[in-house]
Image (tube, rainbow, N blue to C red; front, side, top):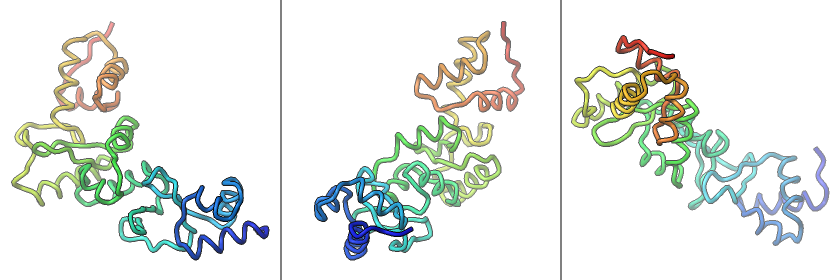
Length: 223
């Protein structure tokens, strides 16, 4: 796609600087941020996954590592897309899953709210290992393999309830909260129990509650 004179100037300047702040680049070249966005959309670019996505780089500049990440000074970019998309990909590709601390070290920003949202959406799973939460892929086979690798790599930090049978991909705390709610509201539907738990900061879905019921051979009584 053909660039205007101003757009060509924007691309040349960004190539020289390697990365730039949207607004700073527009101010430097005395144009609007919309003009900058239009120019970069024509040639392809990445937005930073930290620093509130305020930095950009040209599509052919980054040299991504094995995680699909590239860092310039303290600014991080990802070939996977935005921060939630990146977190999901990193966790899914990690042989032993990831903790929040491990993810934050990689992406250079806080991730707790994002992984919590991915859990609620069913795009990640988790299990409790000792006192830390390990995030895993959503797929059952993948999460089982990741959990096994994590436990083998850190045998001294095996799950605190290792001797207790748990449904794959679910930690003991979540299972207990679900079972308690099932006892408190025996006639409530699975969907309503899931909504109630989510409203009380328990990241569990209706299909996972059904998985718990099936795993323990429980029958749900409804009106």
